[in-house]
Every structure is written in C-alpha cells, then in structure tokens.
Image 1 (spheres, rainbow, N blue to C red):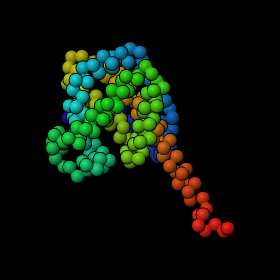
Image 2: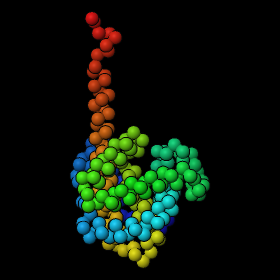
Image 3: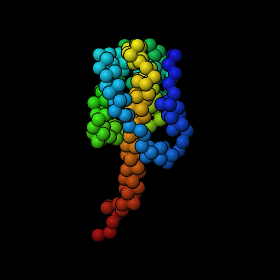
Image 4: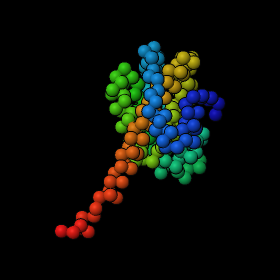
Length: 205
C-alpha cells in the first residue's frame, strides 16, 4: 500500500526464520535507545498523533492483516475475517487498537525513564507468550504504525523523525522479545519440574 519501511519488517522476517535460541540471543543484544534529540522529536510528534489514536490503531491493524495475513491467527475474533474493510468498523479491532496505542503512549512518556520503560516492555513481552503471539510479529506493528502516522503528520514527517520512531520500536520490541523468551524459559522449567516431581498419591508412606 505504498509505504516502504526498511529495518523493522526486515528484522522481523529474519527473526521468523531463526531458531528460538537465535531469537533469544538477538533479544539479549540490546538495541540502541533513542538519543535525546530523537526522544524530543518523538514526543513532539506524539502530541499530533494522539488526537487520532483510534484512527491510527484501526489503520495500523488493517494494514497489518493485509501485509501479514498470518498475524490474524493470533487474534481469535479476526481469524476468519476475509473482508478486511469490515474491520474498519469493528468495535473489537478499535478496542484492541486503542490498547496498543495506549502502550505506545506509555512508551513515549517513559523514554527518559528507562527503568520504567524496560519494566513495561518486558512485562508485555511475557504476557504475549500466553497470547501465543511470537516475537516475529512485534516489529510488524511498529512498521505499520509508522506508515499509518505519516499522512497525519504531513509536512512534519521527515527522514529524521522516521529514524527516531524506528529506533524506539526496535528498542521496545527487543525488550518485549527478551520478556517473551524469559517467560518461555520459565514455563519450560515449570513443565520439567512438574514431570520430575513424584506423584504424592504413589509415594509410599
């Protein structure tokens, strides 16, 4: 649909082709945090974007399902929807889009509070393990967000601002990836522990 995004989606495709161990290693390599100048650019542009967050949220997910239809499998409500135009008026998609936009808003607000931002993104990554939403999808959302906000920002949109938003999404998605992998490892450990634990009913008195 005419929005060329390099970097974010490319990293996602690469992650999708690699093993879980490789994904964990990629998450462990810290992505660059936005610079002070980039943070200011992001915050200034967000003041404009937030007036249309519901619209951006819907556009972002309709585009996501157009460009990466396999992502619909993660969403039970939208899994069998073939007419993507119907989604533009979906209350459920609007609600989910607003939740994602709320996370982006919190991320923007915490860009100069790294510990709080890291805690937020790690926790979201852990919760996405239980949604069966693997890390390869996370940066797809960032790429579609960037495409969705360009028409809203109009002449305010520059290559420098695009790079700033890309840097933020790469940083946040690397933390989400880390959270996902940590939760995956924790669940495997719990499963292994439960198998090794003797059944109390069969234990001799």
